[in-house]
Amino acid sequence: MKVFRFVASSLLVPFSLTPLSIAVAQESTGATMDPIVVTATLGPKTVGESLASVTVIDEEEIRSKAPADFADLLRGQPGINVTGNGSFGKSTSVNIRGVKDAGSVFLVDGIKLHSATSGEASWEYFPTELIQRVEIVRGPRSSLYGADAMGGVVQAFTLDPKQGQRGWVEAGAGNFDTQKVSAGAFASVGNTSFSLSGLHKESDGTAILEDGDDKGFRNTAGLGRVVHTLSNGGEASALLLQSEGNSEFEGGNTDYTIRTIGLGLVTPLNDYWQTGIQFAESRDEQKTFRSSGEDFYNTRLRQARWENTFSYKVHEFVVGAELQQDEVESTKDFAESSRTNMAVFSQLRLNFGPMDAQLSLRSDDNEAYGTKETGGLALGYKLDRSHRVRVSYGTAFRAPTFNNLYWPAGPKLSDYRGNPDLNPEESESYELGASGNYQRWFWDIAVYQMDIEDLISSGKVNGASSSININEARIRGAEFGAGYEYDGWRAGIAMTYMDPEDLETQKQIARLTRQTARFDLDKAYGNFGLGGSVVVEGHRYDDGANTERLAGFGTLDLRANWEFAQNWTTRLTLVNALDREYSTAERFDGVKYISAGRTAMLSVRYDIQ
Image 1 (cartoon, rainbow, N blue to C red):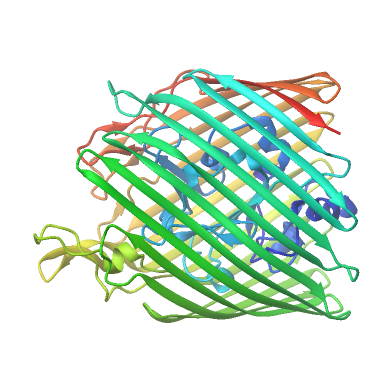
Image 2: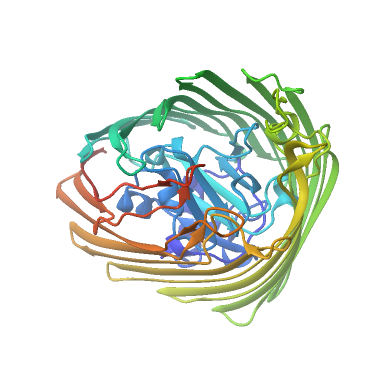
């Protein structure tokens, strides 16, 4: 079951492969239990060949589960901790292998999406309905992606038309006065294909604090893609994705916009050399309204990337350069409003029969915090047709955010202020893994250790509240996954044990649970399907002192779909079917944020052929 699929990987040619071309490559290999991935290496490899821990969530999984929020797709996956301030578009953090949200990279079709002020991605505002594939790579990837890829990388691939498909229309409604409607249209002229899709959903929401008022959410999103296939087999593409709306919280509400724009070209120059170039821009804009006044934080990331792949027999060498510029506009008077990062990177991929080797190196030169070099080495050995072992080592770093460096000082010493002398966090990681792939099922196991220095934490600088480099952390963990597909059955299991320890305090790192488990089971009966998921998480602490304990919990989700006429499908989902109340975070005053109870959604979809 590919939703739980994880094994090896390293980086990506984000603008060279669409989900459709990945699917074509997958079909040509005939390997359903070892899917093609691109986020782990600088080119398409099977999960087993990528030599890292990878989870693939495919279109069938996404449509079957129909999650209300993007982070719901990630919850319970190996190495993933999701925390939030309530349901329906409320502030959400995704931690990979115990690293803070700002220490993981979120890509949309190869374009990095984050807030330069907080360093985090706006997971809660990203429209799940407009994607068809997700790849999660766990472990350090700074040697390929640069700053922040300490814990790992999540990449979402947007909708891409299937052969013979012209579009779809879908509408749904649920409790909490929730409604949504979405539609898409696809067309092609010669070697050029076009796709346009959109979504609108809104909900009155639920209370996010006990005895609180309902807090609503509204989202409107659109996606446009143009892909032109060149006569030499190359590809030129353009992408525009925007999601905007409003989310209410205790004490106010936020108007938000996230947007990605990308232009890409990849083409072979000869039988041995392929080159690609990408120009992209992403925006994260938020305007918050409180009784005390209004604030806005608008950040923009501009990216240019040039990548070259040289092939010799079964060996490949990748070399490239990247330029990024972060810009900030805000009601706050930041000491600096922009910073530029220039990087060069390379990766060597070698194959010697049953032995695979990968070596990656990267140098980043940032005008805010200087030069950082990172590297990675991975070795894999195929024991036989079905079994493989792997070992890897990698270094990574997380860049201080604009808030860490430049937040303006308040009138009092107790008011937080930025620290321009802050150093990036740095890490070393070691991993050992083994996997088995068979005709109808797979399994994978990995153990790892990550040592982090110069953790960015709160402290005092000249008596004033600020960010400082003080703590060290050691994060150890083990991950296991298995899946099975046969005769309409899809089953999967994912289990994680993690020991995230702050070595300075010898306490468990705040908001991280040690244990998670996920179980999925689906069965198709002709035109009818049934399924369910169980997610279990252990307890966690909301504070670094480990005094504010948040209890563990388990949830049950149920789903059913019925193709009641040609091209017509209805779907019913029941999230948290047992109506469990649980919390993954607290407010500053110790009051728990609570998630929604039982949530139902009924939808009808028509596919236009």
